[in-house]
Image (tube, rainbow, N blue to C red):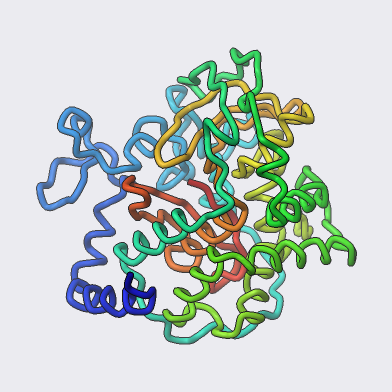
Length: 387
């Protein structure tokens, strides 16, 4: 089998030959700003009312143009009761904003911190390279939990309108979990140990005592031992995107995932890890929470109440609606069965190579689309990441 470095060299040649058209291709593979447009046969995919009939819709057509669960190109729009969620100036007052409203529509001031230096001239990363590495990460995830073997799901009710808060599912989403087998891995145990280190409500300064810093360090140390993270580091440093030294790369990961910034009132009240993997409550709605491990544990403890699923796609993603205490998450998406190191790796990959928008690639034979957004210049902090 060819080494990763040999593969990258071949793909770099491909990138050079196709570089002049890569930007144009990416510009026409998303429906952001294109809903209802006239047909144009030069586009690779379409966003008009009949694309579903011809099977040529863009992969995000359903989310952007039908369900309208994103605020991309919608900030300040006029209220429309037919929309699943909203992006106008009063949506926070009525708790019906889209999940990415803050990322698109709310400016936030952040206090900068010091990081290891970022390489000044990183090499471009093609979609083919993303797909190749994503496959390596997916098939190399030895701590992956298998649906039907390590856990089983009880999907129950399908949620057709995420704006409706009705619980039609009487049972938990996870009906069985091989806890002794799955959670015995140190990457899982150190991952879960961090969940209780945060204040759910934004606007409260998060203090990080030495014990919690040690837990963050323990988690990063464990995932850095895995082949998944080794493959990620090899690729990113070959591209000049992260420091070559492993200790400096780990420091970069620490800042991306655990660096604190403000979502509300100028308080250092959040981090990428808290938002993406634990979840927060802001303006009466659940924000973030894109981890199946966190969902399972919170559901088991009674903190989360599953109400139904919105989608379930290959190779292993699901969108669910749930209630956290008295507040709702209209639609939360996460991978199913992937290890903590895989989630960190795939989100970090997209954050560093396709920040502030869709990260599209093929993985395990399926088209994938991950959204990430950054806080502060040059991608210092992760604001959100989800499939």
